[in-house]
Length: 340
Image 1 (tube, rainbow, N blue to C red):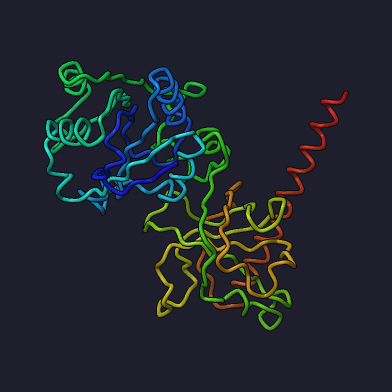
Image 2: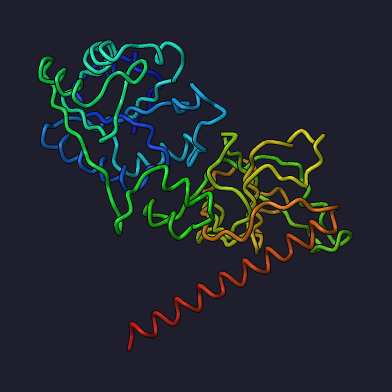
């Protein structure tokens, strides 16, 4: 998959099948739309192209009330590639794009720059300055300018409309099984492991923790308001041949000293329950990992001192091990029933 920042690239000036949207989370509704787009593109012998925006338009217009982010741009692009998208055009949402008229968006971007032959949009699609453009306008322009336009209605699972809003709500309430049903996969955050405050190494025997402390893999979440937050049972991909079980905190770490340089930054800190020997003492810095958030234990808590923090983390680790043990037991019982 090829990724383009902006639309002014000579390689993009060739006929394509296009869909447009924010695709936050790339949920099952998005996946159904991309499957339809891919089918139509194959029939027309066209590449599958997606146009998306960064930041989210509502973050530009009203950052204080913009929706929380389900996925980072990295994770969104990863999921779009899994859906067999050929090209992604990431448009920086700034003043120029925000003020562009709907007519200009069609003629200058869709027709001249991207040479669309087929455009698929959602049932609530709006575009152009003051959201003046809608499906009817786009359809009329397609008839006049020589491209097909189609609209896809809402996608439902068990009577529930699948949307980024529904995913955000489920994440905010910690309903991770519902999130997985809406996404068609476990909710995950990926990124390169970075240096943190190294507080975990201090939580050793002197603070009542294990001798080697509670070392963590730290991954930045590049938006100030993630849709999920709290303490989770997780599994980590990218460290060992099999997913590594762990417990993770996603948030701003309220127990951190406010004077610390990392205070206020959204970070995913993951403690692997059985630390891989292959990582050594360096903690996997620079590795690209994916962390699946499987079950929420509780919201972030502020602890009074290292001893209380150590006890809290130890309990979280114990609860995570119990959750994995319970899941393993359910799997074994199901396998036994299947054999019978």
